[in-house]
Image 1 (cartoon, helix red, strand yellow):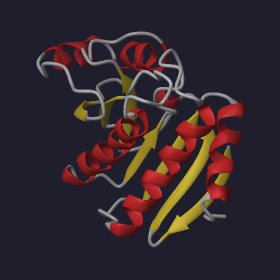
Image 2 (image 1 turned 180 degrees about the vertical axis):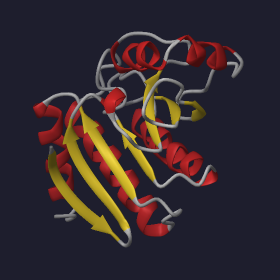
Image 3 (image 1 turned 90 degrees about the horizontal axis):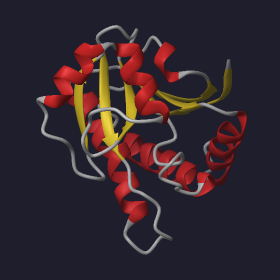
Length: 182
């Protein structure tokens, strides 16, 4: 169920509460670790749902730097692709965490455009075991995506902020309001 919808040009931005592994979109974004070899939280859920082929492809990628992303096929997921974004571990805000988190969202948009994808779903990157404050992470996520889409739409028709909890959805809805998107 959609919690909130806004539009920037021809791109629709949605906030939903759902299991990201069930979404029928061109790509889902994985909140990955630097190894890209699976882990806990959304990362583990995506790897389990996609099947062992995803891990095999990830092994060939040689990891990924924090603040960046790499793309693989989606295998057993409804999504055709998985974009593995490596968010920062929160260390109090003095280690460039906001810029690194913004880089995850920006790089995922660039990869989606490069592969001519029309729909993309993000989880709340770095807010689980990486302890990034949820309200700040939501503002970085929504602000980065909105600014990037406004500056360069990239042909993307829909961006979903897929929240695992109602509290996360509220943080994203607040970010939409703070940024004047609704």
